[in-house]
Image 1 (cartoon, rainbow, N blue to C red):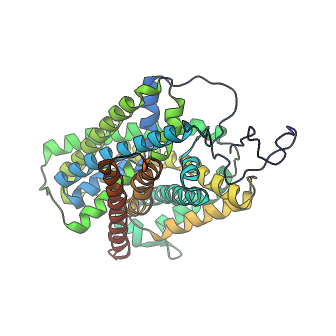
Image 2: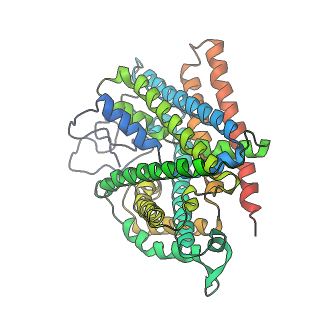
Image 3: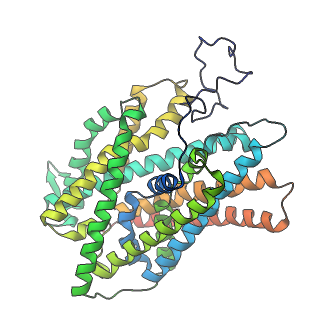
Length: 436
């Protein structure tokens, strides 16, 4: 939580001993504090990589199977390019507002701050809403992954994990999700994000290790068997796959903080472009190799295709532990927004517990990991990644931009809305037409 103590229009700003409660125009991220070392180019590359790559990559091989390998490759390239463009639009918009002669917005630290600077309270509310939905959606996906993976490890087939009652009529997945619940209440009660920060490093190491193991196994299996694969899918699967791709590249909210932290800001565009190219190439290889190895038998979580061996079990348990401890980190922006709006910026334990309960309940009713990735990617990430950056850029520069630039921004807004609505619709169809 940040408090802008330098504002002269804040009530009581002349009294340093009073704790100023956050207002609508208070930045979500602190802009004050002790000076710290800015990031070098390699560190910025690593930070961008960490902020984007997550558990969504595990659903890419299944998406390749549903969408077709060639369509998926083109889709990943398109989403990577559009995400990069959206991030740069945010950077340009902030620079324009901060360099304004009026000096109305001297420091814009976060996406929400930018929304407020461009559109006032409505802009802040819109960004906050999408961030809450997307972050909570990520956490629902984590619980789905944990429940399905542990159920798959403890039963003879993944189908049994989703539909077959194992204890008092409760499925194995539900038992594992509810088993996580009391521990998540404890972890999510920790008020300081600093205490949870080391878990982020562990999470990324586990993710990369799991991807490496899976890709090696995919390559070995592919040399032994070459299943039939499809290059293209249908219109509905296109929108489905697009949602998963957008989800996998979601990290737009970190663009402004990462650029702020970079020592040589003139190199940020180059580093961001290189990182996005590297991630897109990695995603393409991981998704294609998984699909080429297992063909139409590719499962929604690629680690479920690894079988029951010791290595497979260790990798899957490691990923479950990773996501278990990452969940409180991902929920922190949700708590920040809720406590800021409904608790005057004060820590509220019961509100956090209710949010954890809501996330757990949603996870129980969504059986397929990749289906939910597509829903979150289409419904919220399209808005955050495409619509808002282009809209804010247009509203800020509309008085001085050429018709071509204006048309480009408007086209991205329209494209984001069309892709978001279509992808959400097809994702909901997939979720509610579960094979039972």
